[in-house]
Image (cartoon, rainbow, N blue to C red; front, side, top):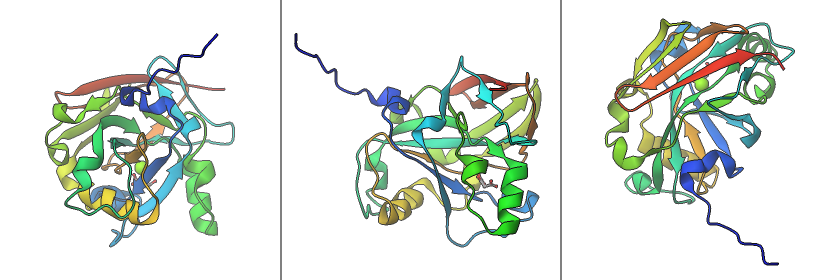
Length: 222
Ligand SMILES: O=C([O-])CC(=O)C(=O)O
Ligand SMILES: [Mg+2]
């Protein structure tokens, strides 16, 4: 019996096993709230594809974490791969977007920062990258000019605007592709605005891009 392989669908990019490249400190108000310098070059780190979680599944607090934080971020889904992509061609490589949470074990991250260690335990654990449904490029014609927000148990925590990003989406696609070849299905998290904070087991996180998408996740323990 032959195996029928169906073509991969970019609207299910989280199933492709591709990489997640995260930009840190891309909003000055968030860099300042954590007492970090406002960067002059993008700060990059990675999450593995096992970090993905979709609505309907729980965000899990890692056993070693005592202070899990939410960070709402606009995610950029790559549609056409490339290396050394120019800024002017960057948007041709974008298939669409997703609203994302960069879940962060903040206590662990602070410890890593003080010891000069990498952030892997703080940022790359299972379920550290909740994502919304895929948003086709046409549905978000001006991604650098949208409001992103996040509520915990119905209280507004983050209320940001992508126009406040320090490094724009075309700049980031170009900058990252010089260092890490981008592949179809990759996701870039573009950083979080101010208002990050703690969540506990049983909390409900709701987040949205104004007039475009909304998503809800609950927090649990493994
Ligand atoms: O953990 C941090 O503060 C860096 C980061 O991911 C962000 O700014 O989005
Ligand atoms: Mg982040």
